Image (tube, one colour):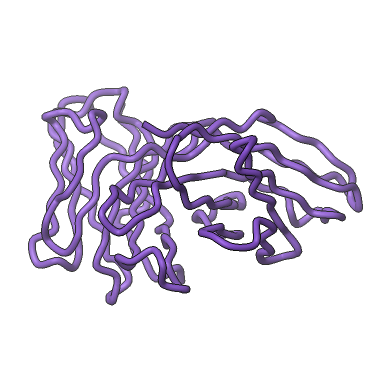
Length: 116
Length: 117
């Protein structure tokens, strides 16, 4: 079974600081990778996803993530955070392939607080 | 509007009572998922449907939980004889089958927050 680990449970930054949130997964096969964001009181929203191809994926709101297969990692980055980025961020994975199960496995989440 | 609707938004019930939640997915999505999220944790998979067929159930889904998607459209999740440990946010998501499609992804609803007292 796959699992996802997010090492930082709470990150506090000042505006304009750079962000990197760690995500590692364990699964021996081919995976699809996702980052979701949950703003206070709102539903989960997709930031970006990786299926194949260029391991550097760009998403919405200036976020990007890099898939490093050898490290089983999919870290989320943003060069300069804003107060409005305050939210909880979830990394998720599912097994690739048409006939495989499609359940998403989520990490524990990282609460990001950006101080103005 | 997320496209995935869940009802009710909040439910407070007494221990031992039965509760039922409803999810209306995006109409063209043939897959529907239920997840449970507790405070400080990521969502945990419960079950999913492809059209009306329930294809996978998590071991988290005890005998007190049952989910249906009778016509391949909306779905219901029922919890019988609720326990305090059932208190959580219950999330519904939908997607298209076919992960190679460019628009593949999961769309989540806002969830139903269940409090068992």
